[in-house]
Length: 247
Length: 183
Image 1 (spheres, each protein chain N blue to C red):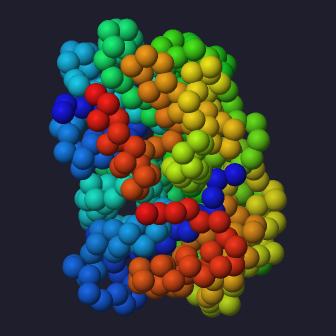
Image 2 (cartoon, rainbow over the protein chains, first blue to last red):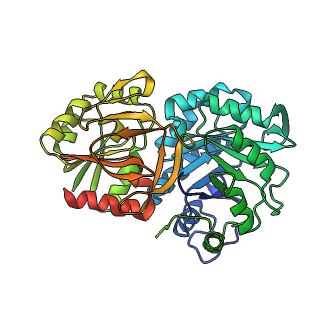
Image 3 (cartoon, rainbow over the protein chains, first blue to last red):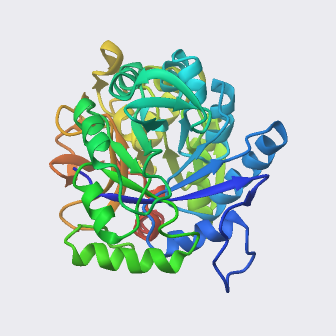
């Protein structure tokens, strides 16, 4: 298996970073491209850009952002938020994104997953799943779907998803550790890679998740601060996690 | 140095062009067989399905252009699906004939999680590159492997890589610089 991946997540809106800007001393504070470049320098294996507004205006800004990131960075990146049609995804990949992540739109119309996979290849299609109490939620965790998380993860795989990005709403933001129980259940139920998300507060939490999944999404643990990623990578190495040499 | 990046409706041409421009080369994204013939280095990138990609090459006359270029000794780099298309055939989509630049065939990955996504070292040199694939080459032209799978294959003036050098950070940049230096 390839090496475990650390994937910082950047929340953007209108082409800017919108959450918890704590990094200082970087040119263009709030510019996702600068932050992305700094994460890349700090050893990020991939990046995820999540468009938290996903409005029509935001969509144009997002395409521009994707092109600027692709011009600047030489690591893979995923874009998610508001992708409802194949055409949306195609435009993002043409601008330089490597993958798209779909969530609510796939729940509303599961055939979207297959359409994306047929056109872009499964390796470019991430299905993001928000889960609480074993149930899948839609629309940024605000709507219950009645779907069982295992059933939906399997269906997403059968329809052509290349990866599952699994966020536990119960642990997200707590910094008390990933929800290993549901994460393991999903990872055992599918044969595509799984990315753990929600709850990382320490290197030990990330190391534990990487025993179960192929990658870990990093949000509040790095808190828009690339220096924290450097430290986290060192701590993970000390815990025996085999990370790549990014130099 | 002029690099022609083949545009045929199968993927990440922009990132490939940018990666070469970072190294000081002039990269042109093109669907023109004449550009492919004239460039110092031709690059066949590609993601997605083998059948639609081969169709895209044929429609534009790039299949013959690439074969003729390699036969004439012109340096050519195939990336990911671009490596798989260079083989005799792929077992994808019930069997797809390839460009037959490299001997062998592309076969579905049968172990581990598929797609195989992530950074993995290649042997013998030990450096890690980024992979994202569901099929892999089986070829006698292999010159480097990753976890037993063909990572680099070479025959005459054609070099094929299963990984994405344009997405492989500093290691990928060094690899592409070596490609340019061999032209």
